[in-house]
Length: 69
View 1 (tube, one colour):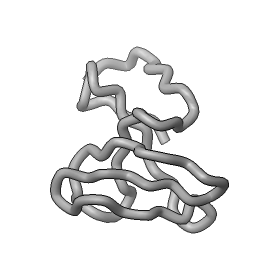
View 2 (view 1 turned 30 degrees about the vertical axis):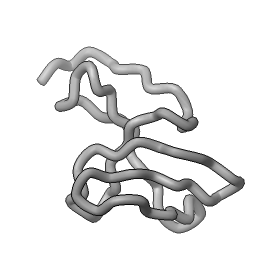
View 3 (view 1 turned 45 degrees about the vertical axis):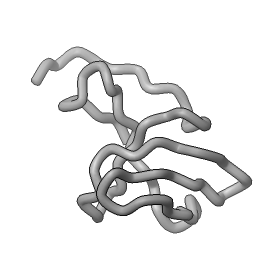
View 4 (view 1 turned 135 degrees about the horizontal axis):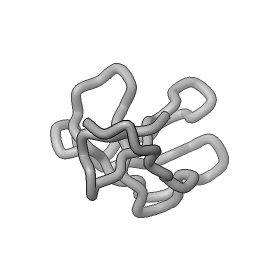
């Protein structure tokens, strides 16, 4: 794991994310409507996340071991 800072832009449709407490794998943001984020996770399927309650972690898919909250 590198000490290099990885920049991940704010979440938008197409962004890759991880759920902070569930082991659902790396999901992809499908849509964002206010605090409602719809994601598709490989080990869970489509999930509606309330961003006012859950903070998803952005993932750099080019370096899957690195992630930024």
